[in-house]
Image (cartoon, rainbow, N blue to C red; front, side, top):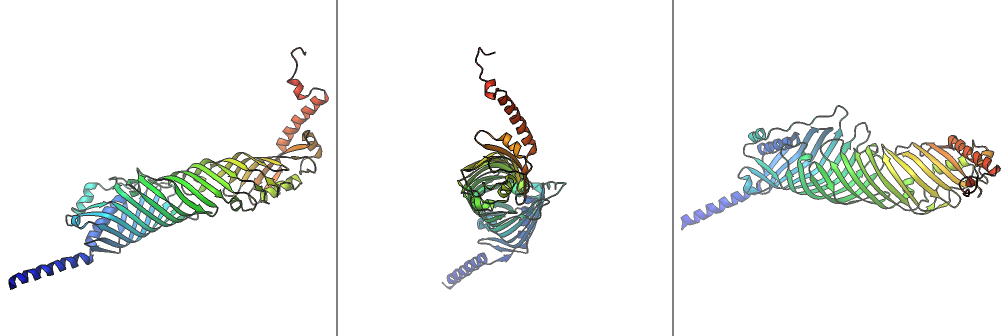
Length: 449
């Protein structure tokens, strides 16, 4: 009986010892080095960690992780406060880390576009060589959770990066395509994303959330929702992850938008915006696409351009006038918003606008101002010329050219268009004096000579 009790005591002590061992943390520098080596092969770069601890029951913990990698078009560097691999104990005993969940806590990633020449892809290490250095270790991941990440994307030649803050990403059904670099191009999975803020050079997007699919070197979203200082938006995004600068396709819809804030002047009504575009890199000059802006009725504010138009006309009948709803189709090319046919109508005047305005400030617009002749005195156009151009209803079309910048525009009559209009108007007047109105040239009876 004492012998049996002793055996039981030994078994209990052994069980307690095993349980304690499973709960304890061990220095796992060798195992951590092997994991980092395998991960470095996957990303085509290098990884290191300040410390590595093994919790047999739950997982491997790496603190102070640093990583770097070069790939087509640029380079990447990252720090991770803590990297946790929640593994399955049974497989660990067979030399396999089967990770239920890979957790990246507070990673900070910096992507820098390279100036020419482009950084070549780093060749992948052959799978056999990697396995030889790791013995029987096999690393598999089924879920990735990124917590409170920060990403900086520095475009070549730009003074400030685009910054993503508070990124939360949860991917499941993870797979890696063997031998493909960079890692993001080899990764596939589905999940959800949330971003606290994306800061661009002169704007920001807040509280972005939606679902994502990663695969084939692309990150695609379903409809994601976010807000800006000007209003709420919905978007879909398809990003090519294989190289820098990142190429993407974008659909964007915003409603209702505070157009007064966008234009920096009160008076404009609420607006809606739709855009279908493609781009390369985070800067506006890499974007091209088509869209339409609709603005509800309101009153025209005293913007620098409208004030300059009034000064050029010599009359103040535009600013403060109630305008009808506006629909403005546009194109975006090389950092410019191009207007092909914007019509603005008030009680006193109508404006037909075409041309472009750069997102950086400069603009070049052609205007046709439809307005009553009475009291009109545009500089550089003689009163007799205006009389010649005035129609039977007492209205005249004054062509203007707008150059300069949006904050300091220069507006003057388009003398070339004025001359052409005068030629046509003069010919018409001569025909009328001769009793040969324009209409008579097209309405002769069949028996007339």
